[in-house]
Length: 77
Figure 1 (cartoon, one colour):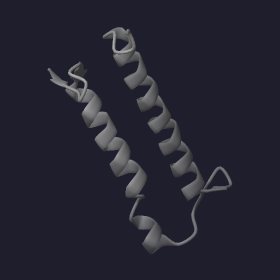
Figure 2 (figure 1 turned 90 degrees about the vertical axis):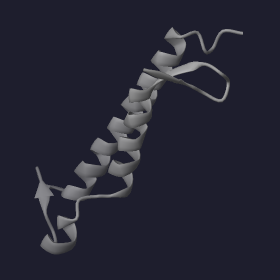
Figure 3 (figure 1 turned 180 degrees about the vertical axis):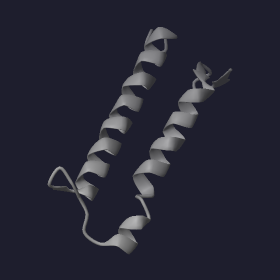
Figure 4 (figure 1 turned 90 degrees about the horizontal axis):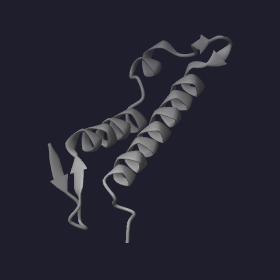
């Protein structure tokens, strides 16, 4: 399924879902941090690992969006 963008071009609905997941992951870190205190993974703070992973996921989402729009010809004049 696709939906029209503001420019009238088709964009897959899964891409909108991916961006919604990006927003949830970036704005709602795990709630157990408020209860457990200091935790570490491989000697690094858990928050650093979490936000590094979220940043990589968001970057991958942007690359996927670029590839989809390039494949549909959105960048053609």
